[in-house]
Length: 102
Image (cartoon, rainbow, N blue to C red; front, side):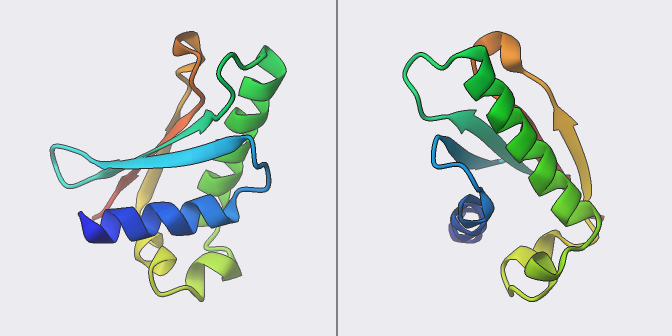
């Protein structure tokens, strides 16, 4: 659980918008679920979409093995993981990134 917390802090540091936040949880099968959502109490659709774009950007950075991911000891654990972005905007939250380790 401590590693998941540290991974989450590192993912938050990669966000470019202060209105978005990454929350991480450990899934049932050992996968890490990273939820990117707006910190605003009542976000507009524009703010939700901005956080969706942040989630997609994080997924892309992991998928292409961006240098910022590869050179960080904690973030590099995500290299080689399968990622899946799921849009859950109906719940006034943004996208989640699910990391599956092989």
